[in-house]
Image (cartoon, rainbow, N blue to C red; front, side):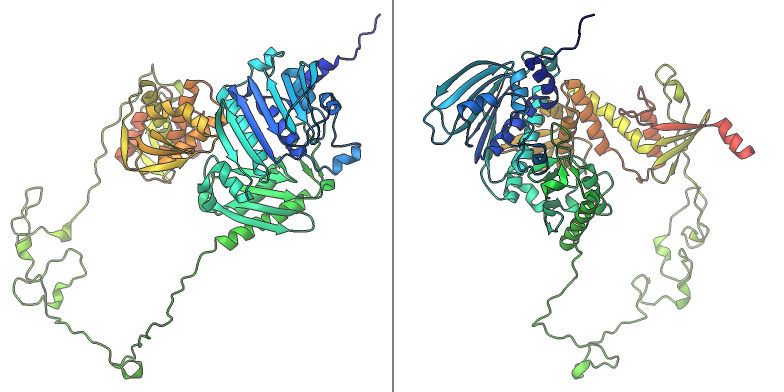
Amino acid sequence: MSDIIRLLPDSVANQIAAGEVIQRPASVVKELVENAIDAGATRIDVSVTDAGKTCIQVIDDGKGMSETDARLAFERHATSKIREAADLFSLHTMGFRGEALASIAAVAQVELRTCQEGDQLGTALVIAGSKVESQEAVACPKGSNFCVKNLFYNVPARRKFLKSNQTELSNILTEFERIALVNPTITFTLRHNDTELFHLPTLSLRQRIMGVFGKKLNQDLLTLDIDTSMVKIHGFVGKPEAARKKGARQFFFVNGRFMRHPYFHRALADAYEHLIPVGEQMSYFLYLEVDPAHIDVNIHPTKTEIKFENEQAIWQILSAAVKETLGRFNAVPSIDFDTEGMPEIPAYDGGGRGEGGSSVPSTSFDPSYNPFASSGAALPPSSYSSSRYSRSGGGWEPFYQGLESSSGTSSDDSGGPDFSELTFEEEEAPSSPTAPSAETQPAASLVQPAAQHFQYKGSYILTSVKSGLMIIDQQRAHINILYNQYLSQMENRRNASQRMLFPDMVYFSPAEVPVLESILPDLSALGFDLSPLGGGSYAINGIPAGIEGLSPEALVTGMVQTAIEKGCKVKEEVQGHLALSLARQAAIVPGQVLTNEEMNDLVDRLFELPTPNYTPDGKLVLSVVKEEELEKRFNS
């Protein structure tokens, strides 16, 4: 029997490795920009075409490469950043694996022009599918110029599963933001299809954050700075009042590298626990500096997962630092009146004379005066009865003369109704709402709601039905109703827009603008009227009718964040997510007291829906406690 185990060719091995390192165009941008940073670049220009599917170009003014290094850089595990395994625990560079360029060259067509400082000529190298097609000497400026074309051209299955241009561009912008936020001393530019999205000059860290996310964020950030022997932490945390349900800016960096760390995030969540509403998120930009020997970044090829040797101790330091920052900047101010130079006010001494002999003004009144008396006579003391409706005493009769009760019986001798015998009757409940037919209503809810409803703790509606007791979550019921309403409006594009007297301003980062532009037609169908003002700012001139009292800015930003999170590429999916997002924000809140008429209307509209039992995202709206179960509970 012949041998069957063979070594894979380098080109195949590189394609396999590329599956982990290069997942999408954003991965190429990340690896090339990080290489430029390691090369000591002070300016990095990134240009992408068709969200990186057609072309990705990264130009830097770093130290460049020699002819030999340029060729060797595309070999697997070729790197200048480490020499031995021990170097993994003293890393001061972004890259170290020596896999990025080899992986990129395995699945794309790569052109490189590079030159070192002082050299007369540089090197031009062309590689496609791990094969070197040409290498020659050329005149080029100092640094490196990488041009990556037709990503995954030789792996059709991978290219087929790339997302829409909007989604891929959003991922590129996310990677770009992470790198730009931790390198404020480097000038960055980013262009997409010849349109400049970012131009970030060398500025302070706080100004760099403003350059990425807008100047409005500046007023929401608090400075944090703490230095211990174990870790140094600096950066910014958001004010509690600036918390938001979606789109919070949350960034952790360690030794100049972005990281995801749910455990440290929990430290911040604990610090904000009683300061922000449940379900809202705080923004933070925190930079940790620790001894490289006490962390391990060699866990995943993306290098965003990092293990800490003293994780629990750093958690406590981080939590304490955030609480101290919030306490220092958000303490309730005491009322302090400035009385310097003001005259002293004498205190009353009870004897008609103030301190220092000053007299206190006195007032006088006529106790017999009554403005309601028919004559100048005062009402006798007996007329002030403990009864609220007592009319004894003269002077009140003219106000009630000629009045009769609704039943036709005459009032007392004075001509007024006898309020002392006033009674109150319970208002009759309105007629029963019409339940949906068996053809349109799910089998689980083939019941006829009763006319009289009861509200429990402002959150649930209780009503008797044929099979037992129905309990309805009023907020979810309203979400279900509004979702179908907004979805129908978008599909028919007939929702009325209500003009705003004073337009609201809303700002979107460069990463959010393409998403907003893609969903603007659906926003217009809902009734939103937005006009661009430049620089990522938009004016909200109109809002859908019926959502008065809600924040238009929060509604629009929330829907943009929903579209980003869901990565919607089909218009119907975008419409569904937009309708659900708007319905959640416009629905009644738990604890809102409803009248019986409002409960009737809510239940009536709920059972007109084709699927009243569940919300669009699959949450239970109503539940029926069977009559048999009730009898079993009380007969046991």
